Every structure is written in structure tokens, then in C-alpha cells.
Image 1 (cartoon, rainbow, N blue to C red):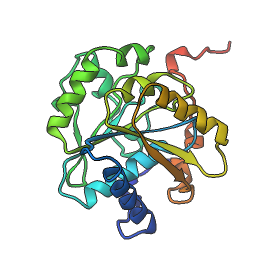
Image 2 (image 1 turned 90 degrees about the vertical axis):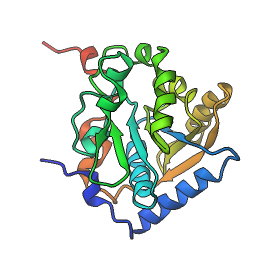
Image 3 (image 1 turned 30 degrees about the vertical axis):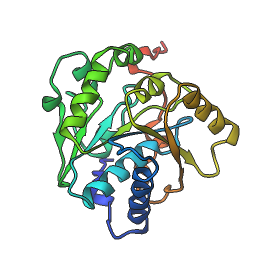
Amino acid sequence: MKTESIINFYDRESIEATEFRRLYSNIRNSNDEKLKSVMVTSSVIEEGKSTVSSYLALSIAENSDDKILLLDADLRRPMINVFFRLPLETGLADILQKKCSIKQAVKSTPVTGLSIITAGKLTSDPAAILSQQPLKEMFEELKFYFDFIIIDVPPIIPVSDPLIIANEVDGVVIVVRAGKTPREVVKRAVNFLNNSNINVLGTVLNNLEEVLPYYYSSKYYSYKYYHKSSQKTKK
């Protein structure tokens, strides 16, 4: 089954779009300093953080004159390229390994003001790539080019990647799937961030299960946090 771009399902007059505009307003008003970068994550898998990242980026771009960037920093199981029907290659991993420049990695979209950097070519050790000095330099350059940056990252508890990236952004939003995520699990994720002195802006209660077609559900893609190269083939 061939998927369509998430853009085809976005309706700026819908209730959901209104809620995402409200979310953006709350984010910008949650801190005295002007925020330019927000990381979107979750406690564990299958909470809809990539969907929230995508809809937030679309809502901001559709309702402002700002230059918006949606950055897929999930180097383990990227989804932004799937949602927007874009090539995975020439993205974040390639920038950090100095295989391409930021300008070469930026991909345009049909939505005025919205650009995307996909995850790039996947590697066997994402944490090592993210720990390199170019990450800090990259964010400094991105903040020069764009007015607002949304970063989609892996969940906090399974892997260390989010804590590495969180040190380079202005704030973090945690997505919680209604009726699924245990409260203690969310508390543990928040504690990870607080212990690292990360600016936690708040949580998003995700109840958008029926907004997008089923094939945008993480379950459809067998969403797991491992790299393909680490899978063992049964003989």
C-alpha cells in the first residue's frame, strides 16, 4: 500500500490544527527568552511523537511568515521522510559526518516556509555520531537560517540520543499517549531530563489516533528501536 504525504491530510480549519496552533502559542509563551528550537520526544515507543512533530511544524508554517525547519534526529527509526514522502538520504547523519553541508541537506516542501532535514543515511552507532562536536556547530548554523526549529528524536527511556540532543535545544516537549503510558514511566523520563538540567516545557497528551490513516500508525511500520544492521537473521 502506497502512503500519501501527511500534507494531504492537514486541514488548517480542523480542530486538530487549532489545537496545534494553541500548542505553539503555549510553547512560545512558556519562557521569557525567545525560543528558537524545541525537541519533541516521548517516554517510550508508539506514543505519536513524530506525528506531533509533523503537525506542529505544518501548523506553524501555515499560520506564520517564519522560516520553519522540521529536523528528523531519530537516527534509529526515522519517520519524517515517510510522512512527507521525501528521500531519507542526504540528511542529519550526513551533515554530522561532514559528507554534505546543511544547505545540501535541506529539503523543500509544498508548504510555504516549511523545510525539512531528514535523518540521512543510517549508521550502526547513532549515539557516537550525535556526540561529536559538529552537532553544536550545526544547531548554531541552523538557528541562523531558520526562525523556528522542531526536532523529532527517539524516546527518552530506550536510548541516550535524546539527552545528547537536548543539550543543544531551547526546550523539550514530551508526548504522552492517552490511556497507554503509565504515569511512573512518564515521571522517569522527566526525571532523566531534569537531572540533566534540560528545559522541559511541558507534555502533550496525544489523542490523535483517528486523525491520520492507519498506515501512519507506528504499529504499521513495526516501530522498534534498533538499527537494521544490528538485526540477527534467523537461518
